[in-house]
Image (tube, rainbow, N blue to C red; front, top):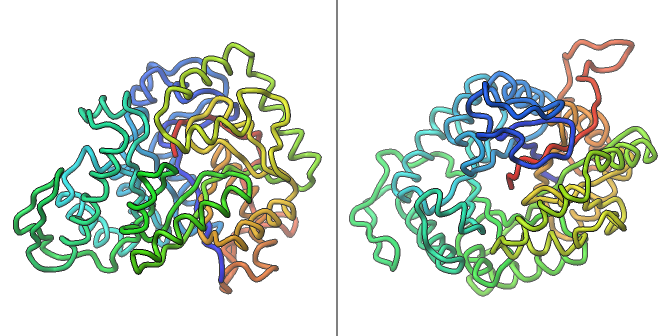
Length: 401
């Protein structure tokens, strides 16, 4: 089976250094209040369009947009970008607790028609009560997952094409429906590492996402969710969320990774770890445990680097190495049952080219990608090589998923 490659849209800002997600004093919404951090790029729609077009040109299937009060709204941003792309799909993250499930079903149907079938959904239950309260949501961790369970039942019911009734603890719906159900139905992606999250995935989702843990831990997660799904008479596919830092040589890749730590003083790391340590997210706690807040021994598995998670919430690991080595690790995860790879690297524009021009051909040569024309076919070449954006050192922390 082939792998599905996806990229990331940094709707909270982009840049060349490991900084925290508050590189913008207000999330980058007002351009006159940008915090003076070297190399930071505002998430203007023009810049995001560059990344989306590059991802499409390089053969990525979709781009993930995060959700939160620190970034631009995912629905509106991706709808705008759907009008300047042709094939690229949009993995739109949203929080069930801040929107009606019937309205969400209707929005998805409208998006699907307007984008000509290019919507995917990433359901983010939320692991931080402080962030949830900013949206007016005061449920605790396990209650939020129980609500997500009901939410997804309603969304799928409303997509059925007939009036749908539902009575649960969190939602009571009478005759819910969408005038025209989406066609095709958007695939639903979902992540969560807690005992409360597993049954929700097993009952409702198409693709279960995990953050980039070492292969053995990922294997255990796959077996856990697969077993729960089988008990429900369902099957679930699997994906992984990782950063990438691929270069022509392993030495160059690791030199770039090491340079990313140069601007991080102990106080910055300690402050970030203290804030992240308050998260109720089991997945976040697992990310923190990979490095323990220390710069030492950050290569926690071959070519798997935990340096990103020293200051970034959410996905905190990166695949670092030569193009072939990064392809090796993707192949290793794929052998464990991972089909979807949601990737990123900072700056996102440059790293998309590093991966697309370097790692993607390696995967294609191994038969891990669907056969088809080269994604760079027809792109003007220079000196016999496809045109590309300049390379750059990655990894701004935007606090997304």
